[in-house]
Structures are given as structure tokens and as C-alpha cells.
Image 1 (tube, rainbow, N blue to C red):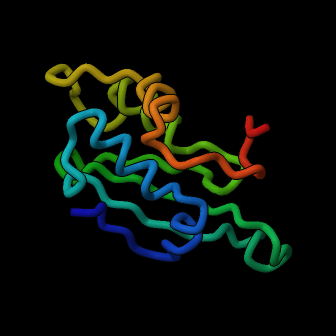
Image 2 (tube, rainbow, N blue to C red):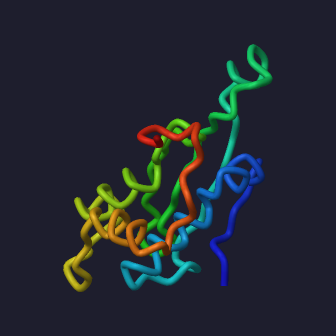
Image 3 (tube, helix red, strand yellow):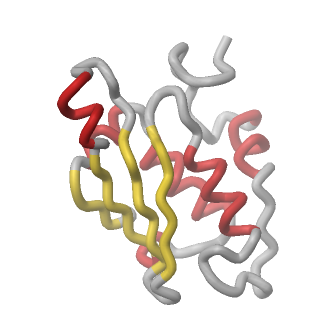
Amino acid sequence: MTVRCSGDCRLMEQVGEKQDFEIALTLQGLCHEDFMLCVRRPRAAAHDDDWNQDYVVTVVAVTSDRGQRYIGGPRHNWVRQFARDLASGAYGDRSAIEVDATDLSIAHAQGVRRASSRFQRGAD
């Protein structure tokens, strides 16, 4: 099952970050149903720059009702920041599951994650 998403989800899906988020959850042994996403364009971006594909994504852990906001888009890597926040306990007690933010890099090296866009930070 996919993660529930509200708002302007197509912004996130266009750069493949919803899939990246779901992969991160799977790598950590977490259920997709335990998280919700809400995607909004920043007001300034919506009015000033039609080319700006940045957005704000709010991630909420359903069981703990804790959430964090991240800046998403082709030049940002909010999924990696989410993994770091998850490891630091921002979404509740994670003592039962060992979380390592470097798992995303391992997944990328193994071809689990989609290929990077040339517009993403760190892309060649």
C-alpha cells in the first residue's frame, strides 16, 4: 500500500520523491500506512516563479502524531533529512528498529532508488 498523500502531490511525484520516501520506509522496516504526507507549494513560489518546482512537504507519523516539515523539489533531498530525523527520534521512540540514514545511499548504489535527475543537488 502507498503512503497517504494530500495536497499537491503531483509536485513530489514528478521528481520521484514519493517513491523515494516509500523506499526509505521499506528499508527501515516501517509500514507505509503509519505515515501521511501533505504537500503544498510555498506561497511565494506559487505567485512569483512558475518555473520553481519547490514545495513544502509535511510528514506525520500517524501512531505518534509527530510531524516535520521539509523543503522538497529537484534541488533538495528531503527524504535523506527525513531518514536522519527518524534516526534521531523526531517521530517517536525507534529503539526497536535500528535506523541508519546511509541506507538510502546503499539503496541508490544497488539500483533500488531511481536515477538522479541532472537538476538534483549532487548530480553529475
